[in-house]
Length: 108
View 1 (tube, rainbow, N blue to C red):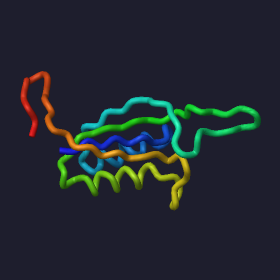
View 2 (view 1 turned 90 degrees about the vertical axis):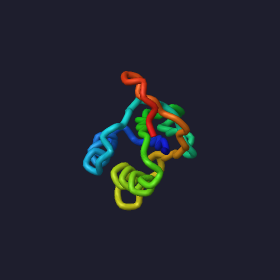
View 3 (view 1 turned 135 degrees about the horizontal axis):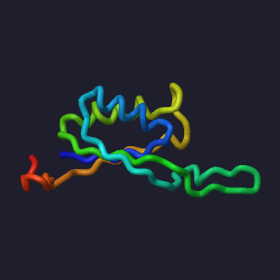
C-alpha cells in the first residue's frame, strides 16, 4: 500500500476530489494547511505573504494504482495547460500497516 499526500491550491480542491471520485478513489481525507514552496510566498507591494493557504488531500491506494492516481490528481490540480508555480506537490510514501478501528481489522 502507498499513501499519496497532495498539497494543492484551495480553488482546485473540488475538481481534484471530483476527479478522484470518478476514477474510483472515494476514500480521501482533506485538511486545510498553510505553507510555502520554492516560490517563497508572494510579495504584494511591501507585504510578503509567507504562509499561503493550501489543501492537503491524502489517501491510501494499492501499489499498482500509483501512476493512475497521481496522473488523475495532476490533471485536475494543474492551472491551465502548462501549470503554474504554486499548483502544489504530491508525495508518495509506503504504508506498512493500516487498521480499521471500528472492526479492529488489519487491512491488506
